[in-house]
Each structure stands twice: as structure tokens, then as C-alpha cells.
Image 1 (tube, rainbow, N blue to C red):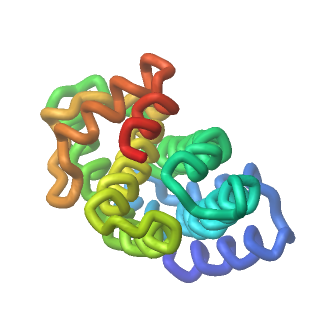
Image 2 (cartoon, rainbow, N blue to C red):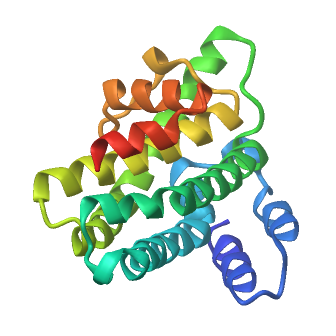
Length: 203
């Protein structure tokens, strides 16, 4: 399955196939899909996200007074960041549904499903929290604030992914890297349409 995923990923990145065709190709053997395989399938969209995130911050810097990357100036990047999060969250949830299937109704099967989602979140954290932090630190010079913003962005992506895929039972998630308190705040912000205010407070 890994070779099929790799080939499909290259075709998707090259524009040979569209998102729907890509998801159809990677949905083979759904019941045996691993969190690692799902993370690999989501990888192209997350790579695009990291690059676009830097562009959003750069645009905000250029549009700010005298091109100075102040916290107030970088708030201008938030609307673009929200659009990027919505895009990658939707893609991730579609990939989860294709490869993991819908959340089971049976309690034992549902617990296994939640464990897979938690492991997937850990895999994505391992792959992308550092690239996100690398971008944010280019523009936010306070290391504590940069880390806080990076974690918030990542947790909002996960929250968006969970909501779109119908998985919101936080207590059931078995994750080593996800901070449940931050994820709960992110979920509340996403469901309440208050993500912009949530991020603005961190800047």
C-alpha cells in the first residue's frame, strides 16, 4: 500500500490527478489503513499549508506600516491563515473518511477508531509542528509567543479535522503529543466561529 500511496501522492502533487481521484486511489484497503498511511496521504496538503502560511505572514509584513513585522501588523495574516486551516482540515477529514471509514457505532470499535485518530494526530504533530514553528519564528521573535501561536495553529487544524470527520470525544483520544486543554479550546473556538478572536489574543 505504501508504494501506491507514494505514486498517488506524486501524481497529486504534479497535478496529474485531482483531489477526488487522489482520495479514491488511496482509499484501497480502508479497514487496514494505518495512522502512518493516513498521515502520509495528508502530507501534500500540509506541505502546501506550511508554504502558504509563510506567504500569509510575509504579505502581512509587507502590508504593515513600513514593512515592520509587529504583532499588530501580523494580525493582518489571520484571515488568510483561517482559510488555509479550513482547506487543510477539510482535506484531512475527507482523507480520514476514505481511509478509516466512518466512526463505528459499536463501543469497542469506536474506541479503536479514536485510538487511530489519536495516533494520526501524533504522527501529524511529529511531521509538522516543527515546520510550522520554523515559519512562525521568522516573524514572531518572542520564542514563547511563537511556540504558543504555532501550537494553537496546529491544534486548530486538528480540531477542524475532528469536527469535519465527526470525532469530538476528546476523552477517548489516546494522544501523546496533543494537549487536550488546548484542543478543547480550539474546538470551542471552531464550533463557536471565534477562531479569529482566539488567535488574535495570542498575537
